[in-house]
Length: 412
Image (cartoon, rainbow, N blue to C red; front, side, top):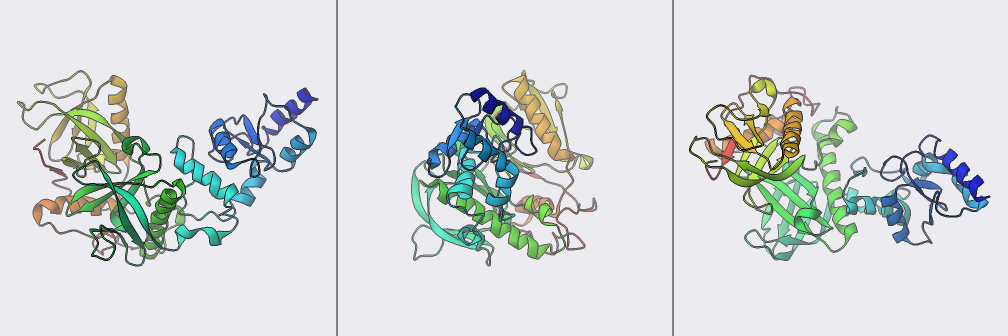
């Protein structure tokens, strides 16, 4: 009987939708929730167990004993049918996790589906309202201590602001249209943490926050995404939803230590923490710095940007060096290993091959004008929109000069 049921389960895995985890999409699930009727991977199975058997009952497809009625439940439901029920009303701004995404994101996705049933009852989705307020623990700008700060999100005002003292003026007002947010558990060393990155007076500012509740931190993340999407829909009414969703938040394409030298042949290499945030390649003395020491804007390869292995003759060459060239200067960099160097070159090349968007041009102009006048261009201003005002994917023409695309505080 056990062998027969195991064979039946393995046959069910071949049905459409069952060959990947219903929650994160990883291939070859080896577990199942037999009361819900879904196939899941090892990671997601662990999260299901934490929900309690009153919500999800987990078994291994091969190692556990299966009753006939449990196999029949799996046969009658399956991943596609379960998705139709538990993901019926997932808002487009909600980030659906995939394999390799942060644990907090995957866990809250699963809890939202089966424990809180947010996507079966849209009224429970408090992150779509365009307004949120509450306390987060924020890292001090000049120290490593965290302090409770009240944050207020307002889609109507295009702002996220935080207060040191609730009844006083905000310490900072951040435009949502200029804000990126990413999960950062390894860097902050807290599972429920976010890194907020935005432009302030022509340079990037980083804010690090966490909350003891994983649900709270994910709700903040989704609230920011939803508010940004709603504003983009107003700014670009003819653009498709799928186009706009790609512009909400982006994980950092890559972070890590590199050695960097200055523009003079006599300059020595210095170790810097590099972060690639969309088209901004930033470098810092410490991974948790509030501001980068320098920023390099990465434009399109046809505009004079390139990256290659090695350095020019006469330049100092460390073992795993590579050269990033912009219209203004060449940056000589070196990685810790050959694989690390090749991966940096690969991710930078992908950025250089990607066509510029109006949002990209707005960021470039902000960094340019830091030196010229300190003035900024809002992401929705007429100067930063495409000529049709309809699509965020329009590529600015090459008549727009893209010069002085780097700022640096240390001359390197």
